Length: 182
Image (tube, rainbow, N blue to C red; front, side, top):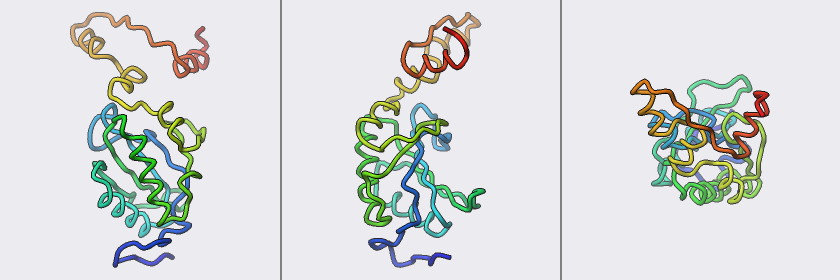
């Protein structure tokens, strides 16, 4: 059982409590539309440290729109912390800065953090190159990858058939292969 920290966090207070793997956009935003908001999630060993981490993140970063922790434990006995931020090209540096500063609390090396994107289980080193390549950093990038365009939405509203073709990229190619379309 971990102690409740009431006087504020100190170096090493969350040592061994926060997993060094996070997910990005695996969960849906509660603050707004997914194309506008990035959701980062961390697993934490106990509820009190999860709440401490939420408090640290919400008070320490003005770019954080919301932070929250699950009120019940997961099947593995851990708790989830969710952090919502605006989908912007600044996100990569914001996240890397946050992870580097979390190192003082968790003693997880910022350079050892990994992430997975969306529902995919594949882990990637949490570095500038991977984050920039895998995470849609603007609303338009997100919509091109996952959602209908504004014109598609207008066509749907007007009962006109939507004939937009998906872009050709690694992601859409993997979907085509998985669906047996080639």
